[in-house]
Amino acid sequence: MASGSGTTSRQQSLGTAQSQFRDEAGFVGVPLVEVGFQPGDAPVSRPEGAILSEVPPNPAANAKYLFYLHGKIIEDEVIRPTHPAYGTYEYEQILTTFEQRGFTVISEARSLNTDVDDYATITAGQI
Image (cartoon, rainbow, N blue to C red; front, side):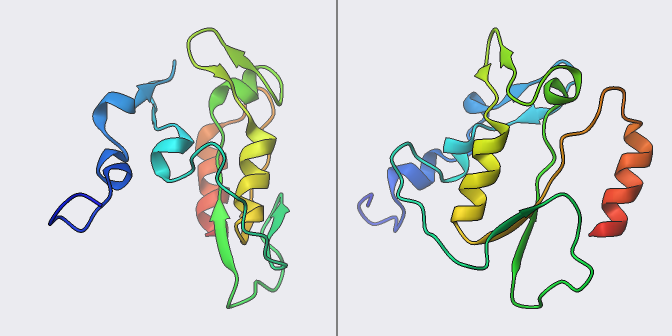
């Protein structure tokens, strides 16, 4: 811990503007390591974690739900694309990591040319 501050240097560095990037559509992203996942972190397995493509008909009140919306590169290319500047997008590994940490992850790989307004309306309704 940093002396007197009560935070670690890792916490102080999370989400800094220097680590953000902007994709072709102008969306700002932050690498997963910047939101608390570090290479080598041990996964925390919990039986309630799951990966789903839609909200369950009877959501559990005690479950931790996480909606994960991937970047446009997956819509335009493949499930595991590689960007020349940012590297490989590990979509399935991202979902699995959240699942291993006890989240019920709601996510789907959008198809090419998905209407973003319609998709946003559907997602907002699910939430």
